[in-house]
Image 1 (cartoon, rainbow, N blue to C red):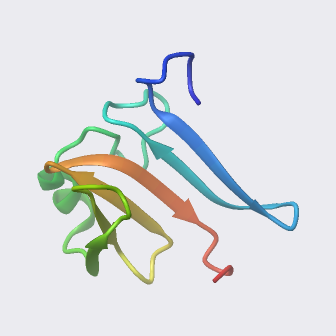
Image 2 (image 1 turned 60 degrees about the horizontal axis):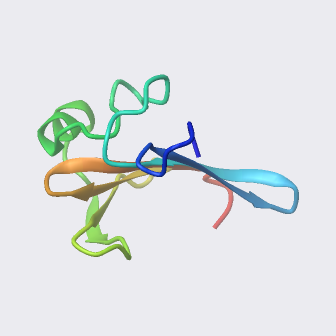
Length: 96
């Protein structure tokens, strides 16, 4: 977790066989210093689409009222809730 409050964004690292295979930042508000390609938590879907263009796939994220936006073949995805980015994930494209 970044900071000490549960309301702050969380940084999540996924490790497999002693190797980092994914990095994710999640939360409702921007995380200074943790933007991805000029996009941060809390930014609008309008800004997301302006930055990355049409998405490849929209599906459920596993969180209530939240969509998972993917841009395959690129190794990143976004969770979106109420037209705002709530999660940014970058994964190792060599790991399935």
